[in-house]
Image (cartoon, rainbow, N blue to C red; front, side, top):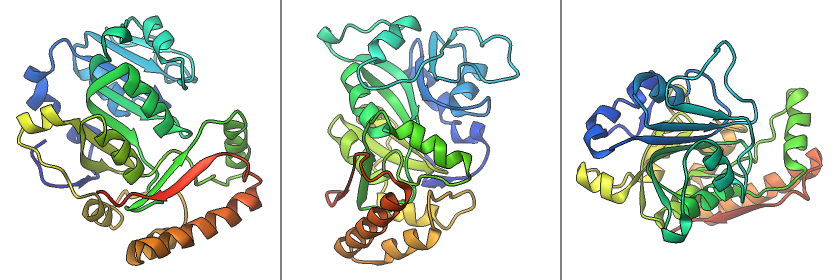
Length: 279
């Protein structure tokens, strides 16, 4: 965890090698995972390698294929996490949070729902306080461009419709800068990128390990030129916006996505694009 490399593209086990370094700080580990994954997903690596007090996997697909039973201490909830249903889903998984006395402290939270990720994150922060937070970010938007997709009943059907014909709807989830801005309000520090995922640490945990904040812009610039970097749209867009004045980049991005959303018939689906200059 003390490594200064801000971007990693090696084995998932190596990504999460820091867990042994913080094990003594994380008593009775409780891990929450929201979003689709497979048995190479960081959450499942944790579940297989650690003796979890409680691990809750929330995914409409249920338990990954080719497995007949979950690891000890792990519960799979076959449902989609969304605004307002987290307490119910967590309770179904054996994690009971009394929010009237404050958010429930857990050790690890992962969010990857390919939809309104940052909106779900904001809702999760009202319920949970993870020590380590791992979430997918939309790598099409370099800092300081901040983007987020909002929940809408028609989004998932539209996403799947275009995905079936080989067209990815690129404006999903949220940008690194948007996620960082949201999480700073709750006392989290950006640590590093792992492919298209950002890792954030609770400030108290980061301070106890002597880890200072990572510069988002510098880290993203390294990441986009590294093996394993995946842009949710044309790489040339990302490169142009990185080299352009932020206000001009915001204008270009807004024009590009206005046209793209009209072409794909999703202009009515809510999202926000803005600058996050207080990095």
